[in-house]
Length: 189
Length: 301
Image 1 (cartoon, rainbow over the protein chains, first blue to last red):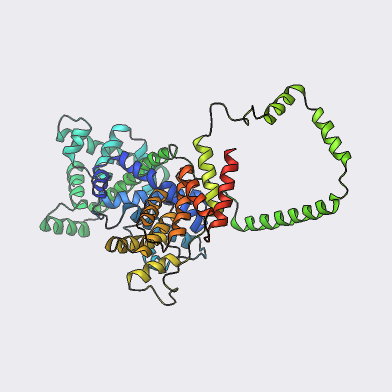
Image 2 (image 1 turned 60 degrees about the horizontal axis):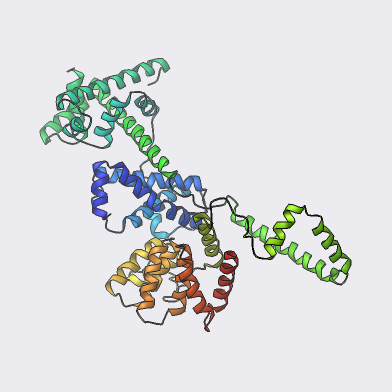
């Protein structure tokens, strides 16, 4: 698949293409990183997943519109950045390429998909999973896939856009109520 | 305050940056002046963040499901230094055994041979039959049912050969940089090569190679980078290209690394042919090629 096609498909939300991209270089990356960094394989697997998600987020948020190098090279570079962060977290003294040192700053949000998660966000994360399939898909498509309501109405077979919009508001309302209920229960602020 | 439907639609528009400048200013002014509005917007932001986290979890699960369809990477949890310790202990034990064997060799008598013969006689009749058959070459070694030589066996052998025989090729092009990162492309590529950053090195070497496809240095080191990155298919193509070009600067090196790439790509026949060629001529890889050939033919028996 051409790199431009890869970007188009990932932007469209084609999860199969994303999974294929993930599978294609996973073992290459693990073999290379094990040899080079001597990190635990479970950490490297997580790093690799984070890198794939970071690339996907950059594409969907239009921060990555074209690959200026081979997608594999881009992927490995993102992995190297994330490994740099991991090594810094563990204060590991291992040789690390100079040119990557500059780009491992924690404020580099374009690369790092992980952020500080507040207690309230963590509760929302769990409550979101209890919302039911239809609501989950609707909010997933709107906020994560960044699809327009017209597209969502078509994908989820709503009668029309207004009907999809109304459902979205109901889902948000339900989610909000569940959170406020939890918050009063645990007296969270 | 207005009803929640309208409010959240407004939040969406601000969040996705679809308000015009005037609306945006009005929104921001309202945020700074109206505490209730601000609180509602902060809750909205947390809701969106939570939705994204749950969505990422969903996608991550899909990636993890994909893991099950990929062959696992062969690794060991054994720390590297323990390998050295284990190797040292093994060498010690082997040397002691050799010393013991040499000193006791003279005391080995025919009696022991006779005992061996007796031991053989003690094998149950059904197994004896197999031993006899084996001697006569009528019985193949025991294999798992349904498998002649499975893909996994071949992969395992390939990985072992690679581990045993692969050595990084040194940078003989540009002396090691003592200062910062060089500006020029080739010294920069070789700087990364020395740093073992083969992704960066490969990227620059690819550019150099594309601008000058007949340059054997670019092609050879670009191919070596592919070996280091475990991209054996690409490495195979590049080494073949170098050998086909007729340039002999890296002839033996290319033959050696190409044979390793063939092995990794499970093309043992092509690897054997190249190794035979290397073993049959005077070159720095002669002995290694012979040894690898022996191992491959041993494992095929």
